[in-house]
Every structure is written in structure tokens, then in C-alpha cells.
Amino acid sequence: MKDVEQLRPRTQLVHAGVRRSQFQETSEAIFLTQGFVYPDAEAAEARFKGEDPGFIYARYGNPTVAMFEDRIAALEGAEAAFATASGMAAVNGAMMSQLKAGDHVVAARALFGSCLWICETLLPKFGVAVTLVDGGDLAQWRAAVRPETKVVFFESPSNPTLEIIDIAAVAEIAHAVGACVVIDNVFATPMYQRPLSLGADVVVYSATKYIDGQGRCLGGVVLGREKFIRGDFETYLKHTGGAMSPFNAWVMLKGMETLALRCAAQVASAAEIANALAGHPAVTRLLYPGRADHPQHALAMAQMQGTGGAVIALEVAGGQAGAFRFLNALRLVLISNNLGDAKSIVTHPATTTHQRLSEDARRALGITPGLVRLSVGLEDPADLIADLLRALDAAA
Image (cartoon, rainbow, N blue to C red; front, side, top):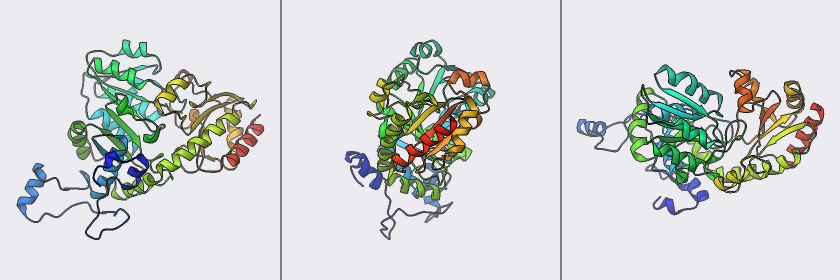
């Protein structure tokens, strides 16, 4: 579709990036093929030289995957996108594709467990130095960057304690030393936060979460400038093999059609639920960026288009035992380690997503034994509130 950048997000989510075959199908087609046929040897040569923009091999690109990439790039306002096999493939590729021995990375300490593993374990194995900072403390960012800093990386909001980082301020600090700003935007979603417009250079998503939105497929995507996506990043991904499958790309396309509607409903429910749980005696701490008592509420409202997202973190009295009583008493909300699903999901980070961290490391991140992360789904908020309050009563 022409002039897709002029369309509003809800329209882009339905129409952007469509490539119809000769049959002019309504729904996007799934091209389940690894390879592509050339009319002659000269055409094959031109394709491999980059003189012909057609497809070569599904690890490099595929028509269905390209539709997904074009659609999310239009929504994000990015020059280009490359879809990956998972969110972690996106994070790994976004950093490894532009780093070498002797380089330096500065990352926020509040990261998803696998992202922390990349920063603390994987990168140092290849001679890349990593400095972890308190993401909300701009003085620490300023003190940490140095001439050899090539990448800064963070999540905002962070997983699972919903820390908000000033994207524009960190980008200014990073760009002063020539570093690339990579942000994981999963919790905010492309509906409520546009990091590229705030100064970020690269945005990564686990499409497994809100983009699919129904717990079906793994996927990830990296977005940024054409030079980076079609240069270092595409070269790295096509040779290391972390490409998205055509079927998963088709599922993501179908998920994107309802992304705006789902996110709006989930955010509205999350705000209602956060207010309902905040005063319960079994809740010793509640973190939700949409509430005025969140430490970075003002920044969240400025960066996230006035919303608090659809994830709530709450600390249940009684430590791990109290949290487990709460989880086990739930009847509607499911216990799982995913998020962004149509179904409401709750998890205990200290024993699941962040269990490999030491107790001291978890404490530094605010991941206490009683902390629970709630991803709000599409159920009626009144039913969810009743289930959560009943479980909190049982925990108490």
C-alpha cells in the first residue's frame, strides 16, 4: 500500500506491508518455502550480487516474513526491520552484530534473566567489557560510558520491577561518545512508546509477547536504520541462522491486526486492577507506572503516551510462602512465565525467570521473595479483580 506512513496505527496494523500473489488473496499468504527459483543463471547471479532485490533463501528473507517486517517497521516509524526466531535472538543479534573484542557495553542492571546472561556471561567471553548501572540514575550512565563504549542497552519498563528509564537522556549520553542505543520495548509495546523518536537507534521486541498476543508462536524483531538492519545485522543473522519461520510470521501478522484493540483493553484493565489491589493488607508493595505512587510515574506518562502498560508487579506479604499461597489460590489467572497473552498470567520471578541470579543480585534489582509479576489479559476486569482479591485473602 502506498503512503502507508500517512495512515494511523490501527490502519497500519491491518494493511501495511501486504504483498498479494497473482491470486489477489484477502488474507496474507503463507509462503512455506526454503528456496526460490530463478528464470536463468544470470538472474541467480544478479540476485546474489544484490542487483536484483528478490528473495534467495528463507534464512535471508521470505515473502511472508517480509510482510511482517514491513508492517511493524511502518508502525514503529523505522526505516527497516528484520524478524528473528525469538526475542532473545533479536537481543543477541542486535548487540553481537556490532561488537568485537575490546569494545565496551553499558547496560541497565534491571534486565530479563537471559538478557543479563548475555551481558554478564556471553559478551565477556568474547572480550567485550560490560558495565551494569542503575538505569534510573543518569549520573551512573555518565560515569560508565567511555570512548570505547559501542552499545548501551536497557529495557523500559524493565522486567519484572517496571523501572522506567529516561530514553532521551540516556540516548544523549550515549551519543556523546558515539555509542548505539539499543532498547527492549516489549512491555510498552509499539502502541504506547516510540523509542526511535526519543533518540534510540535500535528497538528490539519479543514478538512472542503482545505482537502475537495469544501464546502461539515464538518470534522477535529488530528495527532501526536501513544501514544497520540491512548491513551488519542482516549479515550476522543470515549467517548465524536466527531467522523467523514463515508460519510464525503469518501468525504475527494476524496478531498485529488486533494489537491496538487488545493493548487498549489490557491497559485499561491493568489500571483498574492496580487500583483495586493497592490497598489490600496482603500487598506490601505495588508497582504500576500508571499510578501516581510509582517512582517514575511522571516519566512513564511522558514516554508511554499517558499509559501505565498492562503489567503489574506486587509484593505479597509473607515472602515466598505468601506469594506461593497467593499463586496457588488463583482460579482464573494462570501461572506461567510468559506475558502479553490474551489470558492473564502470573509468575514468581525469584523462582522462575530470575532464579539463576544470586540472592544479593535479586535483592539489588528489587526482586524479593514475595514479588509477583502479573500480565493482564483480555478477561473482564471485574472477574480478574475478584479472583486476585480472593487469592490475596487466602495468602494473608
